[in-house]
Every structure is written in C-alpha cells, then in structure tokens.
Length: 142
Ligand code: DQA
Image (cartoon, rainbow, N blue to C red; front, side):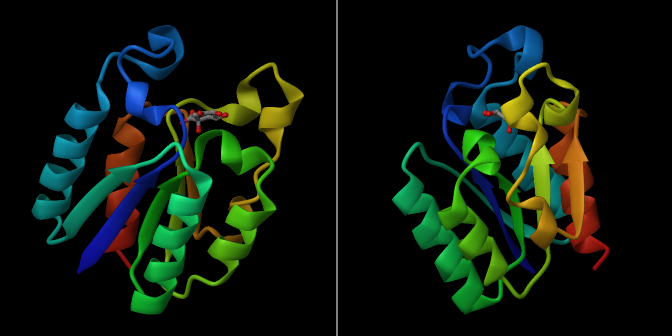
C-alpha cells in the first residue's frame, strides 16, 4: 500500500527550528525514518514537505483521486486553513493527523483548534517524530 506523509510549512527546518519544541531530527532524517518504518509495516511511504499551500492542496487533491492514505502534519495551516479543511474532506482513504508537539497543550490559543481533526481517523500529537511511526502503524492496521 502506498502512503503519503505530507508535511506543511516550516517543517523543512526540523532539527534547526525551535529544537526545544520540535527536537533535533532533521526533515531528511524524518523522511528516512518514515520510509524505514513503512517498509517494516509493508507500506510504500513517500514523504513530502512544502511551504506553499497550493502545492499541499494539489497533493491532497491527487491523494483524493488516487484513494491514497495520508499522514498529514499541516503545521500552522492546521489551525486556520479552510482550503486544507476542504481538501481533507474529499479524502476517501484514512487520514491520520500528526503533530510533533501537542498543540492543545501549548499556550497559544490559536493552536487549540484543528480544521483537520474532523476528517482524521486518529490524531497523534506530542510524541515527537515517533508520532509518525504511530500514525503509519494506524494506517497499516486499517
Ligand atoms: C505542529 C504544531 C503547529 O501548531 C505548528 O504550527 C507547527 C508544527 C507540530 O508538529 O507540532 O508548525 O504541527
């Protein structure tokens, strides 16, 4: 089964970006980890990151067309993008929402709402990059 792991804005700077919150693993390392975890679960994982909302929408729309499961960390778009909401609403295969930190436990009120959650079969938050492994296990489990 092919699974897309889609990461949104600023996640390309993982490892350098606020490591006290997001840890020291880089995005390239995260991508390798996801491919390895996926292989162990019988999944063919493709990891992508973009800072451009339109590109993320194109990927989500293609996933809707292909019926591909998605592990999505929409980063800041999670909290306000109705375009991301509309794209998630079209998905037919399972969508797992992932966050490295736990946005609901963070002090900024804007992080406490997610437009993705209503369309997700599961939300994995606050487990660091290991959350992606948990999300892939959820996808593999059906
Ligand atoms: C994040 C949490 C979001 O609130 C934030 O905007 C991010 C990353 C996370 O993975 O913890 O960019 O999605």
